[in-house]
Image (cartoon, rainbow, N blue to C red):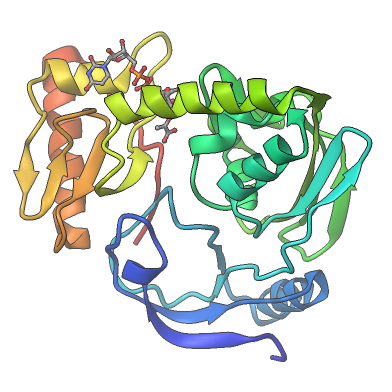
Length: 285
Ligand code: EPU
């Protein structure tokens, strides 16, 4: 297969949480055509595949033998009027910064969300009451059959931390409709969000963001906190004392420790409040 690839790369180096076994086959296409070649080859061979972005919302619980696709497209951002288009492998925070520098408002909410643009689209990432579908005007992706589609979002395609772009879809690029803004005002808003996160989230330790989805009308962080689980530790994996919906790696945590910690949190919260917490992170095993 004429697509750049590497063998046996540790997921500790591919995810922000820094745990996981080996990625046996990591394919890193540098063009959309190579990505399509990869998907079509998998379809032809009857092989499943997985799509990796920035690894900031992913907990890998072992070695992964199925081929993994991680786009390595050129990081070009193009502007047309107040619209910005970027490849899915573009850094999410870097894109928010590029928008701010260009005096375009609308991606301030994204300024603290790590990972790739593709991952952000795939899960309709959001913060502070805003989410990607609010600004998304067009996106390109490969279907699980390997067909290239470009379209505008439609109702039902994106919901709270969810989109249909799972199960073999590959996001290739996205276009955001932004608005002319004053760079000073945009930067002030970004700084305000950063200050809020700085006091409420454990940003100095390796983490994968919020681990569980907020159940409708409730806060996963508050439920875990009220169950008295802050500081609960399995090896080097800990429920953050700063924000209970963050699990942090104190340095040498293993995937098995995170798996056990997540199980315990879910069990205790279910027992105390009857709520079944659903992971917000993707789990690969
Ligand atoms: N809370 C506690 N204890 C805690 C944590 C939170 O009591 O340990 C309470 C807070 O006091 C607050 C409420 O729970 O009253 C909600 O907490 P917070 O404002 O921190 O927001 P969140 O619902 O926990 C959501 C997103 C975050 C996003 C923030 C800011 C989800 C699962 N989480 O967190 O997104 O950064 O709002 O908009 O939707 C992520 O998706 O990975 C993520 C971190």
